[in-house]
Length: 334
Ligand SMILES: Nc1ncnc2c1ncn2[C@@H]1O[C@H](COP(=O)(O)OP(=O)(O)O)[C@@H](O)[C@H]1O
Ligand SMILES: [Mg+2]
Image (cartoon, rainbow, N blue to C red):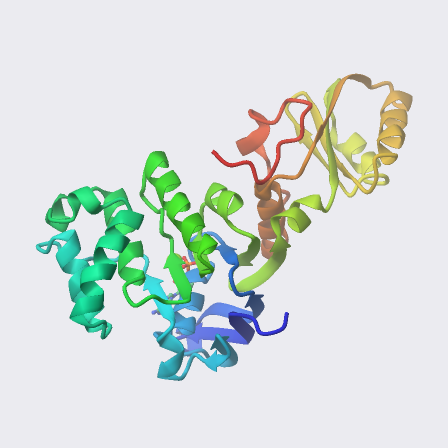
């Protein structure tokens, strides 16, 4: 990628030392193009917040190089075009929403005349115009998060870092925040979003990185990440046993037992005939075949599984809503 808005090269971070050492990031490389929404996905403790804090020079890396808009993040100049919504932030809640934004804008060096114009615009963008004069303490969690987004925008940044912006927000509030971020993207903003919420990232991001125990285990556009394989769900009688599963692995990239049958990941559609032939040859009766596209959840669970080197991941979480024959679109939005 030429001239990325955000670049991370060979980034390592170990907290503490000796027996107390915690490796938070290991050899992470990534780049975010200008105008892109990049989603960094990972479980709690994966290292997402550490990465963002390094990009803001709040935490110093053990090794590696990071730039924002071509400027090393070790330089204060790299912070000027950057807005930040920290995870679990706390605002002085005795101020009104408008008062708080005015305060933060003043801290960011925005002059009074510009503040008078910009703050009502930000309150409007974030749907807080009606609550502008109310004390922040009376705001809902969703409103506080929206105020947090507005706060990150007071100095008209070009790059926005949002750490779990919708954590603890109800579904309607989440949709509202997604709308705001889409509007910002429409204005050319580069957005780096940390989230442990798959659906959030799936609905919003152009590109996704999956962080697992400090390592970036997958990265790509949603299209590329979910295109990878062809997945079929088969209902069989009897259900798949371990011997059959092993036999299927001669043909399939992966095969797993699910309720009433199996799910196979194939290299090509043509391999489905081979799977069916094999099952029939072993006296297994096939009651239904449904194609399904990999969801981001499938990709995530596979990636996390590989990263952990642990046992096969079970996919109970999505069995109930992917029984149909129509492959769900990974980018469908609400
Ligand atoms: N200040 C710190 N001191 C020691 N360990 C830390 C510190 N901050 C984070 N960690 C550890 O680093 C790892 C990554 O944490 P974090 O970046 O907060 O992950 P995430 O944001 O993905 O939940 C975790 O194991 C966490 O306990
Ligand atoms: Mg975090």
